[in-house]
Length: 456
Image (cartoon, rainbow, N blue to C red; front, side, top):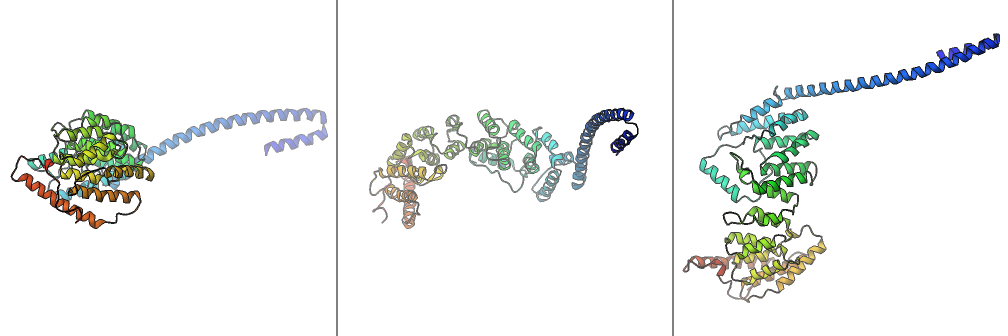
């Protein structure tokens, strides 16, 4: 409005005294341009100042929100802060008498800690870095405790990673980090992978990250930690049953990411210090399913030092390479089926494995058919006596393999059941004879002859 008013005065003045007012009007235009430039510069400075104030205000709002969330979280948890909750959980004493009540309290505290969201993450992260833990299980007698630890150390092959009740404080906190989510929680979980010396925690954390982010989440970090601890294990003071099965959990990590880079190292770990097969290594070989470990398995089977139960498990893994251009695996299959060195149980486990498609799951249908066709051809070369129960078993499983190649169901389940029924009777007879008049006789050297023709 001011600029319009000045222009109108300039126009009227030219009617009365043209020369003088012409000069005055020009000066007004110059002054106006100068004023406009000054105003623009002032507006720029004002905008910069407002941006600075806005950033400062936003920062203040964020701080207030964080403080408000913290206050709300404390209200929800009955006035308990994250630190209060962690301190109480550290003092938990669970017995057979108070188990139900204490477990309810544990669940309550975990739930309230989870509801605090991102506010709790730094406290959880700090606690996990302290490398302390509390088991949420009732104490056992020294004998029962020792038996449980020994079982998990030697017999547990694939330990659990899903629980109805959180087994320990650290596992519960890992759960909460995965539930809360966000960058800080992710960083805290990744830090567990790089810092913990417990195979169980690496497997558990890796599984949580895979479920949250994807199957290759933190692959390098998880596998690096697993390789390191398998090479140089850490003894966990006062460890629990999960720590006793640390190797098993570390091999589970290799399975989770389909890691084949550890095969060569694992071959040297197949037979443990006690002269028994390490079932964790054996399962790893079985799961990767590409015949890479055939050499180590064959050497162990031909050593003559394995127990019968170990031999059966070895056979199942060794024949995974059959039909896959693995001369050594094909030769071992023929040797097992025709030699008296191996027991009936080992022979049956071997022939049964020809029908097992678990090791073919990563192949397409054409590749699977090619392998099965090669196996079928190899099974046709087996020459056994007409009275040998394994001749019958070979025929039955050849039929099952052929049915899979043709994409149809096996149509002679009656013969299948009859064969296995006869096998069980003969196998039991062989065992009785082995335990009878010749105590020194080896089960492996027993005949596999049956009376009558197969299938009668």
